[in-house]
Length: 315
Image (cartoon, rainbow, N blue to C red):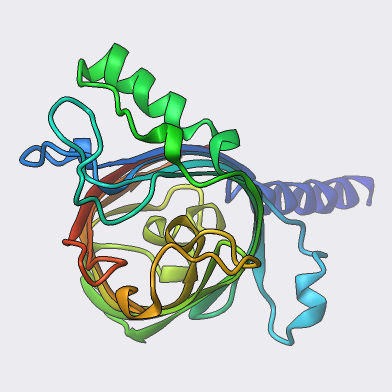
């Protein structure tokens, strides 16, 4: 009898252990956005660079989100540090172009998000808090990169960047499958932000070709931590959408002051967004490379192009 009980306990322990080990619990990620990553372009302009680092952890099954929604879900939490820089075009000596369309702006912030996976969809809810202005240190980072890494000229217009202000934004993103398939699928996302830095909504449609997991577990939307331990992905990813922008502080300044830098008829409130790239995931390592383009935030602006590259490791 004792042997039978011990055998049953051993089987239960083995099953529980296997269940606990079929996924990773933590992930770190580093990423960089830059038009420098596009070989044929030689200028910093508009959204000129972004640096980000993220730490993610898988939530316990007893997470509060389970109480808010009827169907069983998995979820993870994320803390992300971000630095972003926005500049007008400039002359070859680094001086501001007299015909420059937009002001210099740096935006550094911390984001906390919680991501919930459903049967065929996901929901991301988050909060940004940071500084827009010289306190972001975006100017020093860009000029250091030009001076020490690329050997380019230092930009001379950062001294006139937008003044400091505290930034707070609430963010949300919902994604769901539209057409499911083994090597091709289509899904849709809707993301939005409300706060004193950005106010917008952006519906998009996405297509994937290759070897991929369901979107709620896929690297293309940073959801790989919710997948299985030994899953792998390698696919072509593309998407298109329209950003309906009501306010952009990196162009218009402080939301609570009546001193917008541009008249309303100069601002482009409907901005086309598109991207294409490759996503890779093998066991615990993931890599993403994407090429992005967007129409100008001002009606006089040209198309903005940049590339993004990120590496993530689960453990």
